[in-house]
Image (cartoon, rainbow, N blue to C red; front, side, top):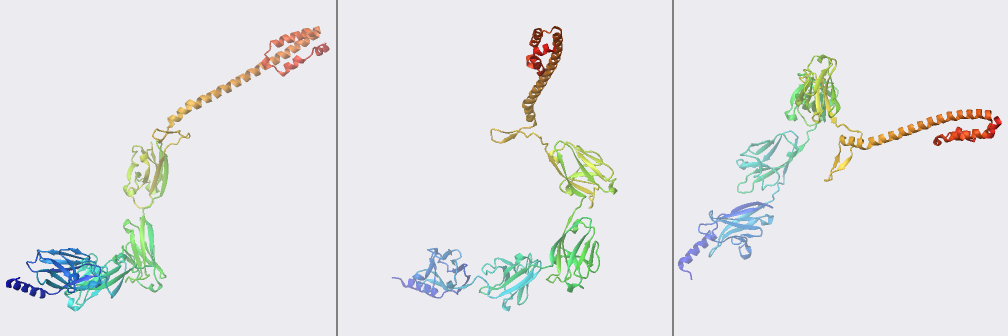
Length: 553
């Protein structure tokens, strides 16, 4: 049994448990977390703590420090601060209501009432729509109740209330942040955005810190439209020359002031000329019909860029303006191509105007004229480069012993100041290897890669195989010619002998009329002849009968 002192001690704590501290207000957004923090008296650091609902019966306990985590509930006890915190994850609308933080003890537990309020995270029912044009500036206004005039205010991008304050763009404490600027009156605050881009379009939340309640939010939806002009054009000009820009305008603006300005954005565009009169190298001419023109003389490199021309200086959105992108080129006489063979020479021709006859001539190498490195001048030759000036209308540069490094872009001219104009020539030199008419034989090395033999191998093959064949053919042809000549000569000699012998035989026949003697003499003569070269006349002679001879007697 308990003593009277123990009962009195328990009664005191029962009284403390029934007279709980003030209600703990907790605010949470659907889908986010809710953190419930409850304090307890000194001396209860080691006691078990828990969160419960309803009557806090056995089934009403949601989580205890002994458990640590139960479903969507987790609890941690900071004994140094005598505070324990319960976290409810993925809060739902049904989680709203009354809870109890409790400290378990002998007798009546210690209870602290908790009221959880839940709201949707996405804001809001009422939306303010704001429209702006690219490169423009826009103000977004946020109203609030007068009693919140001194409350903390802020603006964030997006539509989620739970993270808005942490992601604030500007606040009452940070009133300037890059393109965003904060301003406030008694009943509203404004945020001004400059240099609007398409990426700025979307939802913004205006937040005002509540007084022991949810922060008060309002939503602004920003729409960004392309700032429209008649069209966007491109114009090209030559340095040192003139260019004319055309700017159309509507008929109702015929009497309006016309202008041309320069700048990447129209709101930072600097006027260079108006219809009031010419300015420096810019001259505006209004045809009083449907367009005006602006002529820029003596073009300089700094003239390149973006121009805007129009007939409404108020920059009223609409089709009253033209955006022109002007690009400039540096002009030369022409661009040429030259080809050469490695190891050989090549000559480059460079024309120049007559008035530059006595000027210093030069040839330089480089992709761009402003980084071009001089290789030779009219002052004298340099290494393998020799410049020859005909003193007429052109000069030439001869490059000897061409190397692979000689290929590339060359500039030649007669004005070392690079004054824009037709005083220069751009030459693209390409080089090729000498190509033999005999295709090199392809061989394969042990690793499998293909090798190509050089000209020495080709010559070797010619000497070894082709030349002996040619010599053999020559010997055969010569032998045939000599043989034919010998046969013809021998045949001629035999014909002469046969005729002589025939005459002699006839004479003898007439003298002796003896056929046998004549025939014997002819046979002996035949035996001394060359059987290989017997002519037709000789055969006829042999067939000549003795009767014919005898008859002639």
